[in-house]
Image 1 (cartoon, rainbow, N blue to C red):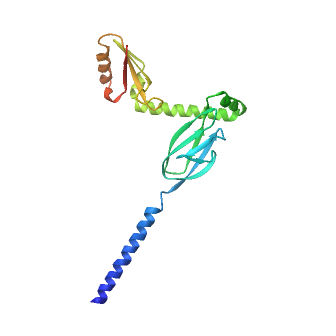
Image 2: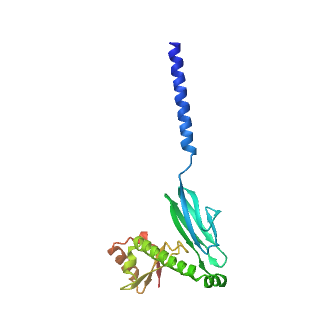
Image 3: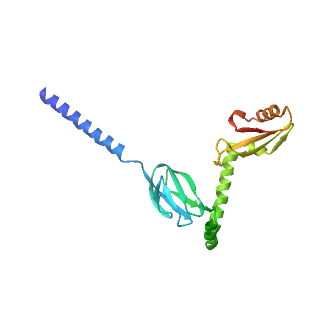
Length: 200
């Protein structure tokens, strides 16, 4: 009986050790890595991934998950983008000039400038598509109603974030606010989900 008990304890110990080793391996092996291929214009910009500088052009191994990619260069507007890494990905980091120094660089690099302008158009189209999906009301604006007008504008709740819009309602008579709310709800919009700014 003692022999069986020792064998049982030894078997149990081996199983526990195996489970601990396997669990440790699974816990500490880290997230899978993917290849991020970056093309930057200007090619000498400073590029960081989660605050750590990386090559502005080329490939880098990145752990799976959400990361922040930031491009900066003197004479150009900085740009930050959230990158979701779930597979090997390609990303273009194009900055746009905001000073005489940046414009001088663009003049001496016309091919890269043309490529950057094309990318700006693509980003603009993507932003508009996202906004149209998020705010179906945009299809009806500007709208002139009895005693009010409605148009979109810059969000005051999220200034500087182009992913958010506010809807400016100009009241032109004493019933304008009421009529505007009736128009919104009558067209299936929920005023409480929109940033509404009333003006006179």
